[in-house]
Length: 183
Image (tube, rainbow, N blue to C red; front, side):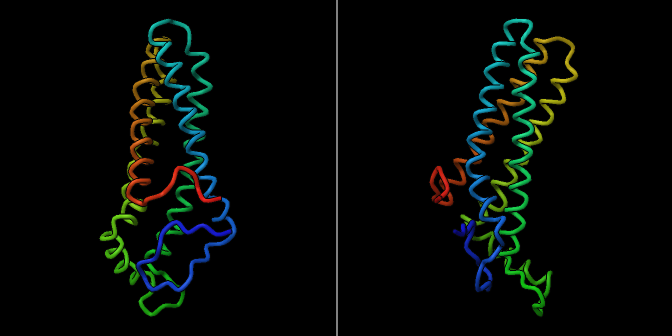
């Protein structure tokens, strides 16, 4: 079973990214729900911890698991992005125009809303969310007391959650995709 992430705007006859792509694409799609669940769990505990003193010990596990899940999701996304970028850009080994010639196709890709949304806009939104998760966790570790720790996780993880939800919904609307991959 082969999943096609994007259609080509270049002159690429067939898309054969390899067997890992067939695993990475549905895994990336399903892992988003695990990530959303972990983010909600961490935010709920942080919300309780802002009012009471003493939840920072129980908050560390969901905060760290959220960060780890987001990092795994991001690594899968980098792989998918690179494979699809070269596919959409029309890169072929041994082509006359070579590596630089594919950037002409990238200009065409920017004019196609679906491909632009997935390759560039979604990627940028999720990168900002990843940075917020890491900043939030770093500030959580350095906070002086438990209430400050909870406030930091709550603030940064909530902002990241909003971005993640917006990024997911934006891609679903612009690319006319479903909530689950076609398994």
